[in-house]
Amino acid sequence: MAWRSSGSTNDILIENLYRNGLITSERVKKAMMGVDRAHYAPHSPYQDSPQSIGHKATISAPHMHASACESLLPYLKPGSRVLDVGSGSGYLTHVLAELVKPGGTVVGVEHIQPLVDMGMANTRKSGEGRELMDNGGIKYVKADGRLGYPENAPYDAIHVGAAAADFHKALIDQLKAPGRLFIPVEEAGEQNIYVIDKGEDGSVTKKKQYGVSKILGSGYQASNERDDRFKRREPVSWTATGGRRQLYGSAVSPGKLTICNEMKLEHREAVAT
Image 1 (cartoon, rainbow, N blue to C red):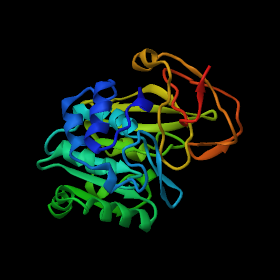
Image 2 (tube, rainbow, N blue to C red):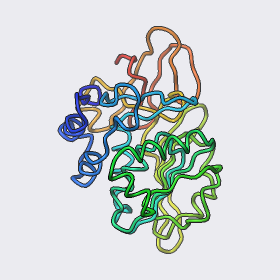
Image 3 (cartoon, rainbow, N blue to C red):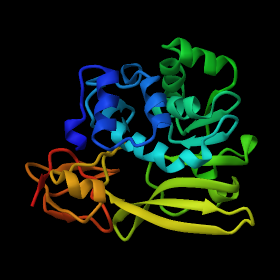
């Protein structure tokens, strides 16, 4: 359904995501309705696909942002503290801030100053964003995201927008107990989304959610012509077409790509087999 969710306005895009079952929570729907993607995506902002934002970075497809929000939602409450590693354009940072206000704080971390500046400038394009920036609801910093941001720890929820080589103990250490981490992790040449929960007793559990492709930068999207199978997250195989595909961090030659677990997230120019 992802490829059918694009719209001509932000409201239509979010309504389509909701109608197609890619957003299931009214809270997530309201938060995404309140953040105009056009302030963050320079091209085709209401298309449900990743968009380049420069500096070799990408804003992920809206349905992938919705997936992250839905996953972290039990820990996104008024007053919650959230870390967004790889904040990029600032879009998801703002959406997360909508989910934890009033009283919550979201820290967006980027490794280069131009992306930090971009996030701040984009967020200030709306009155809601300016208010969140001014009252401390959103904070952008330049730092090594692999090390988290100890200054504001511990966090109720941590989102990582770019693939990690491992689970980064520093991020897990900065989770509250209880708390949740949403992170793509590279494993044996493939990448998988993991949800890592820290219990009240400090115990840590890791659960693989689904496989992802390597789209250039930190953006990714699902592409699936079997709508019912997408909703059930059943395995689907894909064949890349055309030239070299841009994947999550690198380019690979065309060939058969099969999801490693529950769902395949693939560049939108792939076709089902």
